Amino acid sequence: MAPHPGKLKPVSKAVHVRNLARRFATKTILDGVDLDIEEGEFVALLGRSGSGKSTFLRALAGLDHGVEGTGTLGTPESLSVVFQDARLLPWRTVIQNVTLGLRGPSGQEAGRKALAEVGLAGRETAWPNQLSGGEQQRVALARSLVREPALLLADEPFGALDALTRLKMHDLLRELCARHRPAVLLVTHDVDEAISLADRILVLDEGRLIEDLKIDLPTPRDHGDPRFAQFRIHLLSRLGVELPGRKAA
Ligand SMILES: Nc1ncnc2c1ncn2[C@@H]1O[C@H](COP(=O)(O)OP(=O)(O)OP(=O)(O)O)[C@@H](O)[C@H]1O
Image (spheres, helix red, strand yellow):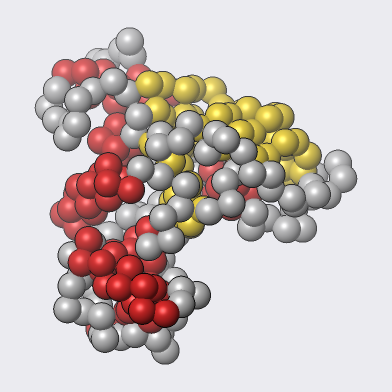
């Protein structure tokens, strides 16, 4: 395969992917992936470890220079990426991290507003190492949303957080997305996280999307709802996990 041209075309949909392939040396990781994500749609991507979720996200983010690949890839010009680690600059204050690249008083104001939205009003002049892991991820979310991206790409953003903090971050992300309405692609290992947050859930397996499931539950979602449990059983089975005594729908 020839190296992918690496040019990402602006499109009216938030994501438009056709026949995307990516390989490392002799190993094919993505093998003809097609996907559309509508503006404002929240999509979660599940898959076994090593199935290529991050490779796919990096392709969408335009961060895979030098990786062999082919296919059509369209994303909006304004996109933000959040990773498992907050990736804050330790020599910049919290507000400086959020407003990096923004200019003037309006940038400062937007930064303060974004920090307030993630529950960190008053922490503007703190240094990253004075914040907890969860607070650092809040700063990372503020930094991504202050630019009002049309597409938010999130790679296991809560993977390093404890269970309670993670649940709080789910509520926060849900609120932020309802307010700002970016399209979202959330890569996660956590089936319940995906069902709690997403409008649609994809499963990547052996280089292809083998599942594209609409989650039509009201929000906020009740984990005790029998339909939540049915989605869980079905998705776990698509991931190769059969729960004893349970059959997927
Ligand atoms: N830069 C690279 N060079 C060579 N192989 C790579 C590179 N990046 C990823 N791979 C391989 O590609 C495959 C897919 O990796 P990727 O990180 O996309 O999977 P993933 O589904 O995100 O995994 P996980 O859930 O464990 O994070 C793995 O086998 C990995 O070893």
